[in-house]
Image 1: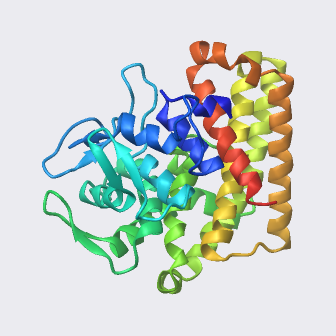
Image 2: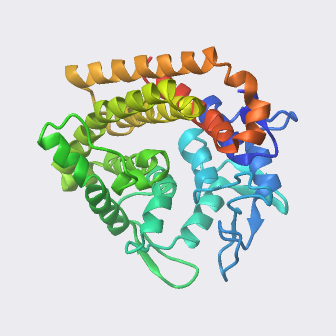
Length: 341
């Protein structure tokens, strides 16, 4: 993953850490983890680049040239705690000294704002939920830098309720045995990556036995919706690809990239259920996983046949989002495949 090793692109480095672990190196020879935090972490900064009294540090979302730094709040700290599985005692260099992962997590807690009435909050909070699920326990409360009290159980209960609202149309399609639910950027489809980071973050909390008991069948209902999505979305991607082949060849590469994005994130999310919740797929779900692996393999082979990875330098200029998706989604796809070996 040469392109994930760019020391000027911390978002790409974080994806490299997801796939290869904390020893992953940037192309300048430094540990990717060290580059992310020493070169890009800001003091007294929120993720949008602003400042607030008491918020100890944060990342800008994008650099001046629109290179992603931390487009989703707490993605970089989550990469250390959840993806690299580093202990909270781990030390990382920052521009003003050294911080432990525990201090970074505490900083995320101080800067956290629970605003369940905001659609933008729900689109952004998945990575933070994942971080908190990995590092906190049920019953946890704290006071933020601006004096608000956070009850983490309530945060996750609200998140599950929001996930149910956003997947209601998919649940209806599943219940009615509809072949597909059209994607129109509605509900869960308004999120990045089809909302699968939100799904991962919410359901990770159910690894706690008390939470699993409280949530009951609501967890299984979301798992059923996840597996329903595979066939529903496969049909739509296949139709879009056939249309690109026949009438809109300029969309062929973006559609293939979207296939890799969805199948890779699907496999990764299902693998997270296995590791976080000790969930085991039944025979039908095993077949769905096998289908997702086959479809991902086919999409990657078509990308290779179209020499997509040989065009990365030109894509960086001509189609920057496709360039970034090829980096990030390739890491998610490989990670998802590894979860089912």
